[in-house]
Image (spheres, rainbow, N blue to C red):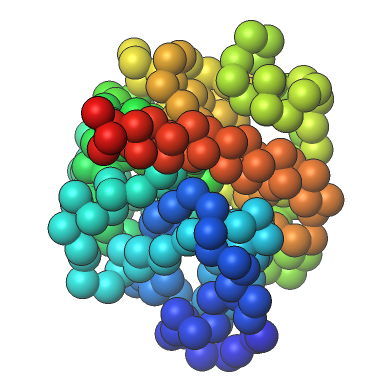
Length: 269
């Protein structure tokens, strides 16, 4: 489904076949709407969110969409789950990473969504809830634990396209040996779908780098002990191969199954 409207409705992103929803629970955090959104970006939000949810539905997840641009639910409801998936969106408020005022090419800033999502990320890691962050979600993971953000990449040609040729491009990334991400994806060299003008700067002290671009830009971070991974690229872009998406979503499901079993065991103790 495509629309010229700049307002994204939940009905436009939920899968037509929601799946059996008998598997582990996952809460999906995404801002369906944010400032500065034009029709092109709105269609990307529709497509990417729908693809992400369709993959979860196909894996049997009992998924729930949490629209962080709508009235926000209590944090404990977001954490009452077996996994959390944080999707991409607009830019993070630059004041949250120490850069006052607007930065070049800044768009889509929603400070309330940033703060809520970071609270959810920290709480998920503390509670051992498996967490996967995509693009902005990966940046928020890094920022939530004290890392930095590159406000505007320059040069940027390896990381994004433009409106004329397409905002998303194929990008080569190399995974770091010994990381959870490398174990999930199975090989170190990947061509992924990218479209970002910001990125992780200094990796948070509590995290470690998990992937890097050819120009040295950080492309993934992860927690060294908790199941918390953030990738800068967009596996949910269905113009890519989808191989990385299937592996990441399946790994999240496997971790969620373990989490669900632990929760069930705690209830019977």
